[in-house]
Length: 98
Image (tube, rainbow, N blue to C red):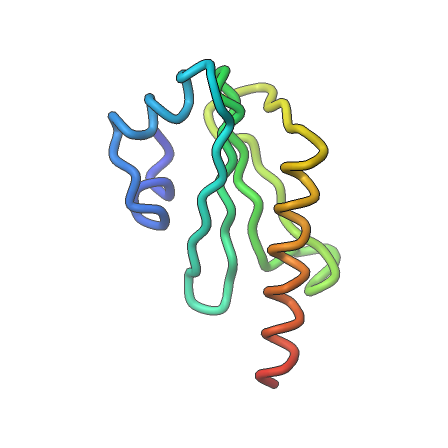
């Protein structure tokens, strides 16, 4: 298990396996790390992806996407839209604070 999972999201090794291999429902988890937003997505069939800010190439106009301990992660368009909306809202809230 990637060390960021427990430190950012408070998910234990057992919880990680349960989310990762439950074969029934995908799940989305969020965490704030300083000024950054992190969204962890499990597709329930071994896929795990971490979406996060900041984005090296696109700054505040983009997000970083990393596969965690896997080579693929399937995602429903509705879940992807939900994650996008979280980042959009986070970006707007951050802009309003500055």
